Image 1 (cartoon, rainbow, N blue to C red):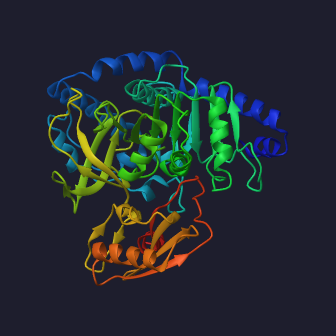
Image 2 (cartoon, rainbow, N blue to C red):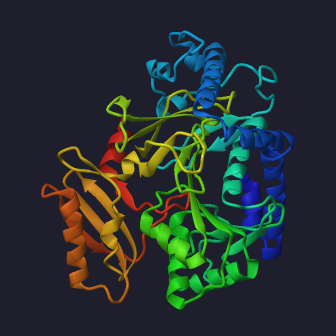
Length: 467
């Protein structure tokens, strides 16, 4: 939404805001959906049942075409030694250099294809912006065909979750749809073009939870699409109050690490399955949970490598996601270092798909605690399970040997609870790390409305230093 339209939106009454969102929704529907999206979705319905050998052959064919296109038409790649094609083994991809975020901040003419309106590249370019977790957002250039291919994958995920086309959707995300100073409901707006209730992630508090529940009840969503951190307090409220009449068909989560306890709370409160997925504005990788709960790399979307110390991570090991995307000929990303972490899985899935699998999505590399000994410590959420007297918490590493635990306590929070937190965290971090617990009034969301459960300021500050 442009600045002028955003200003008009902010100054308008509620019904006009709903109308403006619906008009904007029509534009997004035009960009994201259409004949190509439907045709591509039909193809994805077929390719999801390919054998492992057929999937490998498909990936080799698309990788060869991608590399040829990028090294012939994109100046960024033309400046590098041209690899030998066609590819006969996916392991050959590792011979190509890793692509960093800073390299993508080069001028548009350097990172996009010189083709326009031919060679599979659309004539008109669309800009997509990343959230900029470390304060340095990216601009991704694509075309309408790329967006429609991208949304075909999300539609397939909805099919895995049992959500029909045109279903009523309640969405919690980082859109500033409600004035930050608003203290009374509604904390949501309606996009009629998408049949979607858009709920603010910025206004959720103990005082507003009853209003959010009332709004969801009145809307009756088939699907709730949300950040985990936005839905968890609502789910907790439903359980505490014994409310059991909010029953969507499924919940889809994204954009944050979904821990096991948050999944349990949401599924218990809403009486349905949670389907978590991983993707990004860069459109380089797409990982979705199937009906069996396995995280599947969508192989038609691209190739995901999980790399640790420059080498492929083994089963059960944590590494960085290095992604090569097949969807976007305007701005091809080959071996793109996402900065996100995952754990490798092995073995077939009982869903019957031969897709590659991940055991977990761990979060961002700058959102794990790193001890003075160099250990990466993620998955720290279990330390809070035994302390029920907290509304929200955040772990911040502000020095190499120190973390502070920021807590928004309830009235029942005690010294014993504080000591239990320090003991549980110290057991995981080791004796070289000192720990303080700090009470705060609230934990800020990012500009995109996300909840940063772990923040490593040491790594972020190092990343922002001039190279």
